[in-house]
Every structure is written in C-alpha cells, then in structure tokens.
Length: 360
Image (tube, rainbow, N blue to C red):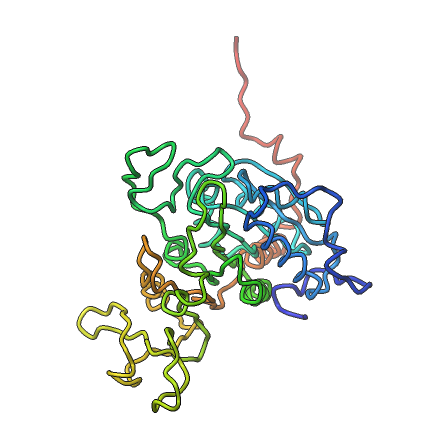
C-alpha cells in the first residue's frame, strides 16, 4: 500500500500476517471489553501496510486502552497520563522513518491530556490517534469522564454529573485536524475501513472509537449496535454519496432503496436536520464531502447527534484534507538553517558568550 503518509517507512521483506503482530503477553482486559475487538482489528489490519514491524511504534498514556502497546509485537511505550501525543510528537519529529500510533482514552486524552491532544492536531504531526471512548473512567473503577452525559450517576457523581460532555469529533474539527473519523468497536468491517483511511492520511488522523466498558458503563452504545435501532440512530457517511439513513425506501414503493431519512441544511439557521425524504423528496439532501476545505459542514454533522440518546450519530470519515505535515516543514527549516549558517556546534552553543559568574 504505497502512500504518501507511509513513504518514508521501510517495508517488510517478508509477507506478514495477523499472528506476526501479536506479542507474547497475556491480554488482560475484563472479559467482554470492547478493547479486544479493537486490538484484533488493528492486528489484522497492519499486515496490509507491509511495513517492517520494527518501524511501527505505539505510544499510550494511562487507562485501560493504554495497555495496548504490550499486546502489539512492535515497538511501543506505555507513557504518562495524558502525555502520549506530546511524546509521540517528539518521536515522529525525530524519526520520520517510523509509523507512529497513539492509543488513548476519553479520560486520558480529554482531561489531563486535552492541551497535548489539540496541539498535536493543529500542528498536523504525522500521528494516527486512536481515541477509545467508553464515556467512563474504567481503570479507576467507574468515575464520570469528560465524555459522560450530563446527569450521569457514578461513584464520583452520586447525584449526577453537572458537566456538559465533550464531543471528541467536534473538538478535533475545532482544532483544525486534517483527518477526523468515528467508528464503533463491534463493527469490524467499518473499523478496519476507517483505520485504513487513517493510515493512508499524511498528517494527524484522529479516530474516535465508541468502545463498550461492560463493567462500569455497559450498554452505553446499544442504540448504535442493535440492528433495528441502529437503522434510525446511525448515519453512515461516505464521501460523494447523499447522507441518508433509516429504514430503506423500498423500490416497490417508488423509492430508491436508500434510507427514508436524509440530512438537510436549514436555510435560515445553517444547522443540519433530518427529514423524511418520502414526503419532502431528495433534492435538499446533502452529499457528503469529506474533502471540503472548510470544516463547517463536518462540524455541523458532528453536532447532529443527541448527546444523551446518541440518536442520529454520524460514523465514518467526517473530514480528510491535505495540509503540510509538521515534520516535513521542520526538516525543510533545518535544511535552510544549515545552508545559511553551516552545521551547528552544540558545544559552542553551551559554552557561548551568554555566561555568568556567580560570586558567593
């Protein structure tokens, strides 16, 4: 899979399989945890890239998801709380021959790590960030997190959370991220498709993964996983196709076999809403453009879902645009500095003229 994002990373000489990416460590998450599905998807997908395993690195912070590097037969680092994007930024900048992945959770990335995340996104560092969102603190046993819905009853909010939750996709779009997507742990095919698109993207790619914590927040995403309810709740985004969802409008009813609901823009407010196309027709239904220069429509799509019920939740790639990658700009700047001034002398810098004598 020769792509611009992976062009500097050495390829593997041998054909690889999922087994090659499994470490010898026992996977120790709670039975039934959604992390298992994500791990299997990543291990099954990475052989497609054809990259040498020693040139792939996973960096994590603190949380249940942050055990991920232990289970990958690649290089990795289980780092410190919230700082995975900062550490990964340094690694990606210093080693452009690596494919660097960040694995984080809603608490790790959006609480103590919030600043590190948004600055990695705005810089467009060549990182692939997998944000596992289970809307709860799992590792510390069930406190509310930055993505928990308002009124959430937990051990730390016995009378209900007073905080308005973050929408990670909206946050990333507001930080001018060049690639933003959302997927679900139980949808292996969709998860793999989104991971593939993220890997191909040059620059920062953020993938929010709705992940079930069956111990402390079980069933948080049931509305998106139950086949019948998901038809009305999940809005699947595909570039170049009308944004339609809901039960199909059957051809024998004069329909086109696509969803009966379509996403339209309110001409008065500019907000997005869903209408019944069997009544209003399809002329106003938006066609998804993931490559639009402005993030305005992608942001409006990210706000379509109800924060409590998750009704009308968009999944897929919301935005994928090109912008210069941070490491490339930095390398060009360093080359220019060397051309102008010659190679630097670190010793001379440390022993330069700006020194002081301390008199006791």
